[in-house]
Image 1 (tube, rainbow over the protein chains, first blue to last red):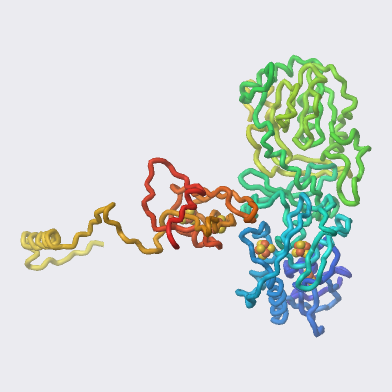
Image 2 (image 1 turned 45 degrees about the vertical axis):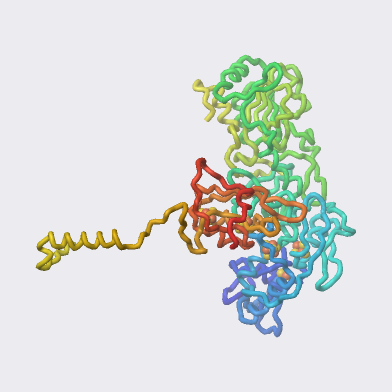
Length: 470
Length: 147
Ligand code: SF4
Ligand code: SF4
Ligand code: SF4
Ligand code: SF4
Ligand code: FES
């Protein structure tokens, strides 16, 4: 196999691979602004300059393909001088408002300034300023911080596939804008905050909520649709602050849609039911688990025929638990947007799907019948969900008694005899099957919120004598 | 280790040494400088760098703080709690700024970390109170010194 020598280290490469990627294989991170794996190459920031033996000028590592026997130096004096020069130019107009910038802590400009930049500024003239035009509900722009890498423009063209961002004016006055100042149309606008290497484009949702260095993150799966995008959830003190996509070339590549990105707010919504509820004559009363379990248990035992409706955001493990516990019951799957997986289809060119639930495929494979076959009149109806699929209005009326287990909102409560709070996707581990049949395991990101308990603990308590929910 | 000291001739007559010592005490008693401060009428002058009660420096009534969260990050006692927000004429400002003063160890790291010259420790050291105080933003906005 062909080899290239990078800083004295032999690295194998495949034809066409660029120096920047080959260097990453041996943990040699070449600084970059305009280059992004998922976007086309423009080689315009010049941050990735490297020296290639036999070439008079420095070359850009992001656009130069490797050739056999090529000798690359990424740390020579010539390279260091060039890179620190590029960095200095980028900071000539930069406001350096890191104290108020949401990107601070994960900003390429900060990182490379520290590694390759100079200690002090040699310029003392006024820095250019812009008046920012609103870009719609997802993204907040601060043009003063922009370094003109054009990743955002390419992102809109290539990922969102709507040509809506452009660079207008030129040179020092370049301004990145949406065409005619219109709000962004793309359903993937949140990704602009991910691709922008500086704090020029940040999400409004996360704005000023938390400094990023406080956050820890755990890998999980988006439960927003049947695609099952790989994401990571950032949290602090058991509160989720944001979701970000994780690279998986088979499913979502580097991206995720806005609906999924901002679709975690039900977890910490003030209207989420966080303690067990029992229906009284006119409203609901909260009880402790131990006080409620005997009456729930009695209700389940008296019921002759039970229907269990499982929302398609339940995991395979939970379906199995329900099936063992209510072995004689009829099981139905429920997804709000489609009846069967055969109705599911792609909504756009990229990743969004029509089925807005993550595991309908898994439920079908477990042998659950479609929701339309559910008949009214059973003794007891049990509904189980994880909050992404909401408790359907009026479902409780289809049976004499009804119990909702899962994540319910206070406004969805009508008709249920009991509401037993269980976990949302981010609080539990499990397996989802996405629309292609790919099984994906995920782990819990945060601990259960409030008095919510895992499904298996709740069902175990129903049969135990000590009434304790573990 | 035990060190044995040889006593001199006069030291062995203990009473002589005793009266010499008493003499020093009595000299200080009658002629020495009085080092007690008659607090609160008299107050001690501390160094201008003394680290006492906090305040947030403001210019024209607007706090210097931009809620960058560097002070809560550096604070070893974890006693600063800030909520950031946005208002019309200031992009980012602290909506809430609480210092749980009983946890504070007056290390002054917050003052040192602040990029905006906002949080300051004044010369005020009288912070005794009848209740457990948490300094809120209104309280911290009182300008306690001209630092
Ligand atoms: S973009 Fe980066 S360097 Fe610029 S203000 Fe924001 S954090 Fe600081
Ligand atoms: S807004 Fe961000 S992504 Fe777009 S050109 Fe400027 S720095 Fe690059
Ligand atoms: S003086 Fe030290 S302990 Fe007190 S608030 Fe500042 S950083 Fe925290
Ligand atoms: S370090 Fe200064 S500017 Fe930052 S939050 Fe603390 S007081 Fe405010
Ligand atoms: S990353 Fe190579 S020129 Fe920008």
